[in-house]
Image (tube, one colour):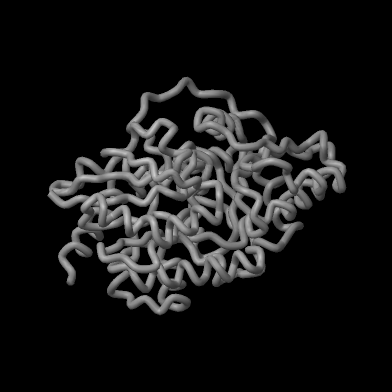
Length: 365
């Protein structure tokens, strides 16, 4: 039996797409992982929460995932020490960063290279530190997992990792076959939902400007979820005089988010850059019609099921939302196409291919 130490220092219960990734993969990995056992090296926040999804022992690192300095030190040094102490045969670092050096081989998941592709979206000193940490982790890893062909290309280009050391393992949306069907909720007419944090590349100010371009008589209601603390979109809403049409929501539980997806007429994802675009699949798997940015990685994810708009064209986004909301038949058609597209992705397959990467790393010397 080989022991895999899973680096869970980044995860606190409030970390969005990467947290969904690690919970979904490790919630499904046990049937795929013959000959492997797992131990989670967790942040103090995660260790104090419900970790029944993890298929092994959880060790409390005593490190806060909310304290950037403590977390960075933990990634660089504590993970490797824990791997030796706990007699691990392999380390999986699922959140872009890992040890500066490790005697135990490492598989690193790199979701995206935002600090390399768009350093202007990450605060200056923090961007430089992240670039250095990602580069060190990738060069020290025996194998690098990533979530899309677009991200794999960035890893080769910016990190100079050979293609032969990279495993592309796409993510998935909601597993509609794994849970009992809920009673359907009526979709609210002319209700638009956007999901994501407030990093600049999420491009939510442009979405608000597009909403403002739609005449008040037919303007949809917009809900934007995912803020932490004071919402930087609030002044934009006030400037555009959109208080009657826009709801800014904080971090939501899975149940609350499910309800919003079920009630919304249209989901909009106006991002400028993504490594994968998990909210797109999560929305389509729930039958939500999708408008998203016309960038290569989202074509990888959504195929022909989404409606694409240039991510900096405010007028085109406004016109597209208005056209779709005025056409219930088209919304219904897009809903069906989205469900079909989402079914081509599977968390069980993601878990299986993740284990295959682990086995390759263990076999290599």
